Image 1 (tube, helix red, strand yellow):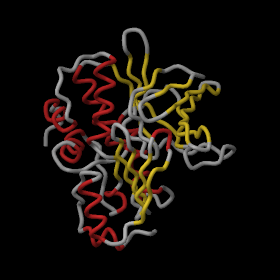
Image 2 (cartoon, rainbow, N blue to C red; image 1 turned 180 degrees about the horizontal axis):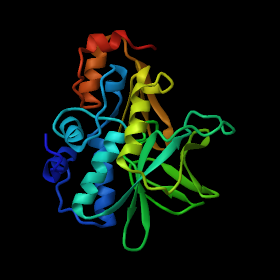
Image 3 (tube, one colour; image 1 turned 90 degrees about the vertical axis):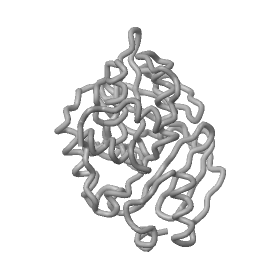
Image 4 (tube, rainbow, N blue to C red; image 1 turned 30 degrees about the vertical axis):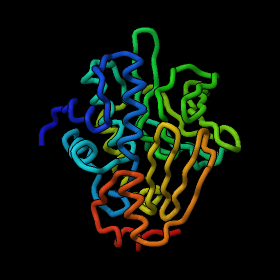
Length: 271
């Protein structure tokens, strides 16, 4: 497989029909199209399959197949697309805080996000945070609420450590903490190995999936299918009863063809 990035294939995969340029309009449109078309999913870690980050493997899985991936795969793909178009992009690393208690110590850098430099300002782009997918890039500006079609976000500066938070029904919730140190591929390889193999992370123990459409957020946590409106408001929730229901949801809601029999996957899921 070649590491050459195939931009036309990627644009077709996400349903982008315009002429891309290195500007905010294109960045915003690509971001929304990507999270709608290519779902966040952690099937490979759950099934003890390796997660490969070389560009050829990422394209083969996320572009050429009916698959999604998690943050390292998603943002590796998005970074390659943006750079091919002509954007200036810096890969960053973050420490996930979504499930952490506020006073708990910081964990390792197990998340990838992107800083995109436009002529007048910098934006954060992230198509791979599976607990709360972003539907649009965010301006790198602290202490202001930023509104997108599906959420409200706030960036805070804690002495050089930046915290990104999302409004939820109970109030703002911290997504992750990050600094501006540029990451190199080996940094991501280490984080990816830990995230895809350690029993301490969710992906090796439960099925996690998410897709973000123009007006709905779809989440699958093991057998629980959750549909949310803006700012995390739950509008529907149900438990999948059997493998046939899981097969239907994978196909119709997430547009995914699983790499193993659905019956095998369903049998290993908790409630």
